[in-house]
Image (cartoon, rainbow, N blue to C red):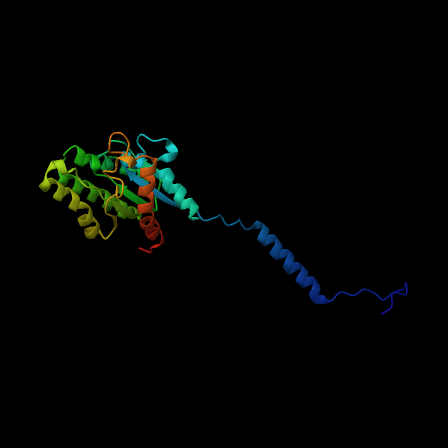
Length: 224
């Protein structure tokens, strides 16, 4: 068809208008949709005493910062929370647990009991306290890595046997993961401990992190 000007008259295919409207609608909907937030990092609570708190060390050299650094290097999206209180016993751990659970941890490294042993407290009471903590953690839905401890040998064989055995017994009874000895590779090694012989140096903490890290990542990846 010729226009009055002599040029062909411009025509529009009837479906082109519908397609244009459709794409305009999709664009509007896309702009209105909220941007999907990045997945939140997995929250790990290190719940313990001075060994967790980083007693005697600069803040960046303690267990929590070194564990965070190790996980960061692996490309793991995590937030490690320091729930350590120097001098805390298993009874103290029970008392402050609800406050710490307000952080809604996905995984808890439970490291308590050393001060019970240093004070010669009844292992049966320490066991009951740890069991209370474990049950409440399970109710919260958090995964649990129980870090074991060994009693000083000057307390006698009977005490040591009762204390040492409570960690594997509790792990088995409640079907939770166990890291048998938190100070593995560090205890009794003067070059890895501070002057008191009880608390690790920066280098000692690094040994602890190297030992416990595979247990932490395995639990992170588990479906249980």
